[in-house]
Length: 297
Image (cartoon, rainbow, N blue to C red; front, side):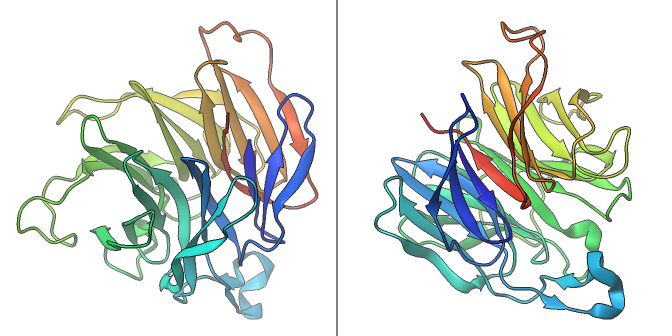
């Protein structure tokens, strides 16, 4: 498994069996957040360097609205590091996903959009563009279903505000339609605590949720709804997390892995599978906040 530390920004290789950690990339840039592996190459986003407003207090002092995020790449052996999208072309790079066919997708929180680019850095474009300056319009998590042609994303809403939502639309824009005015967007879930990262596995959509307990700081899943239908009541798989962020599903092991800002990676057995009943366990406890995670074979 690979994991990102937000401060200091680095890419870690984590051995699930015993929690051993080694550093793959020492200086991964300012505030790494989303990570994916495709064809032996590691891709990750950076949120960029925030500005600080001491008058807002320590928690709210970080302002990531400056456009200085990016998308980066390195081979699994640590060689060939490069910028896929140079710093400054992205406002806030959050969760990163791949369609397995040469495109990377990510949410931009303060950028209020979902964007994509080819793995070679070409074809940078926006798929969803929401009005800027409205916290309810900030996009964070993203998942793609290339088989059905669907794009999913979260809009987390205010911190601990219970205004989070999950949306779905086509991966491709309709002919002649702009990302600001696309008409195929479906609202699947609403009034969630604070949904962050997404993972699509078959007919299940998984997501991490920050926000206030009992529904917040949880790992959730729900069946993917049919076209035009709202999402069903989410099933909480784990709770008591410390500002949970990253998410990876190992379907073969029937296990979900979640990371949080408390520096933990937790293994959560999936209900109904062979691992059910084994109990949750912390794989890693680090002194620094962890953000995105991804499984590797």
